[in-house]
Length: 536
Image 1 (tube, rainbow, N blue to C red):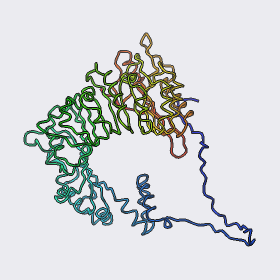
Image 2: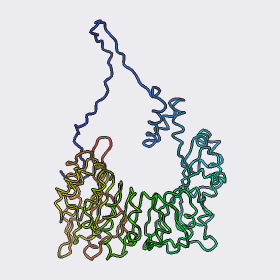
Image 3: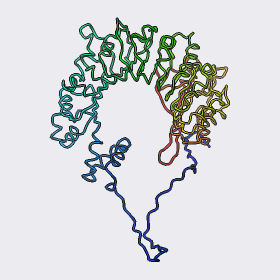
Image 4: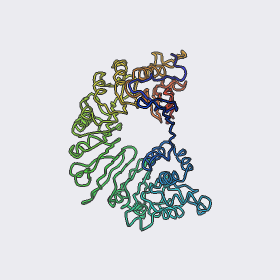
């Protein structure tokens, strides 16, 4: 097999489950044993009209998620289907400039009628005209949720379409509308706009608040965000995203944040001790916890493990310079925490993997759906071997993690037996999506000179891995396999050093990414290279 072109492979047929089509009577004459009289069995033609309304609702809801255009076409087939499909098709609606204009009811009266009658969930951008948007929202009879997304660059109070101006006072007072806020930027308010978030958003309606990372590290106090959170009564999701070391909430008196179900902290400088945590935070309802570039040693030291036993998602990774000398203790702490959590569905950790025994993963064998298990070392430096899970441990996981469908792992061919490792990966019965991190096979010669011999060594190595995975897969076939070489990222900072810079100048890189995807139709899989951009 040659690998200088796109690789195409097909999965072998699986004979364990045989798909059989129902037989249709051909109208042949058969004899009854009792009377010997010929009996005609006419073929029966079925149509959608033969199905119950309840079953059609289920079918069309599935079709809405798969192919909305076909759903819209099916609405034209009959009046009955029209009455069933219209509430499904217009259940969720994305407002745009065309539909909020005053002339829309003249140009598209039927569309507006369906919008006002059937829509329950509306998506709105912040750059839409606020007056026209509010007019349309006020006419929607069944409005139950508003998903507001900020778009723009330099936010300033009054310059965007704010939810407090879009929702009617009746909606706000009655708490009827659930408000989802997305990509909310951090704003460096001056004194006059200290509580501008409270002015822009009806706090009692917010159920989800997701902040957007600022272009520059946000170093001022988070008073405006904190004041908004303290006024929320039904919020479930809070995502905080900063850059660099980040900052943190400064609490006073008996201030206590609401009990989140889903909490994400990115570049949050956690410096709360146990007393401050118990006084100002409430993890009683927490189910999904993500900590990225947060000082994990401080967090694990201040939050009792009993507060986290009910988690379904645990995602912890920290590649910053936070307390580098504490990484071993953090790795042990994450392992101990994983052992005390009752039932994880998603486990994503970056740690010293040798200090996180495999039984910490097996503890969640019955429930785990997604696993990312990576080492701090990674593959940014080809001279440093990356600790890799033993093939025997991986094989044990493959027999017990029967519900795992997504995995991300390290595989350093220098310290493991690749064939055994890949064979173990093929044994997960439901595993369909895999991200495998490997090291570049390129090595700079002693003289530092690049010799071009016409081969693409990293591509060929990735193709061999993919071929082994496809041919050896047991259970469900692969949907997507990503081979990440040399610590590739969508936005790369290339390796330093005179030799590597010269190689990069010639178009030879240590960081590559190859993606295999399976065609849903014929089952063929294609291997392609994912291209990123370079950060100067």
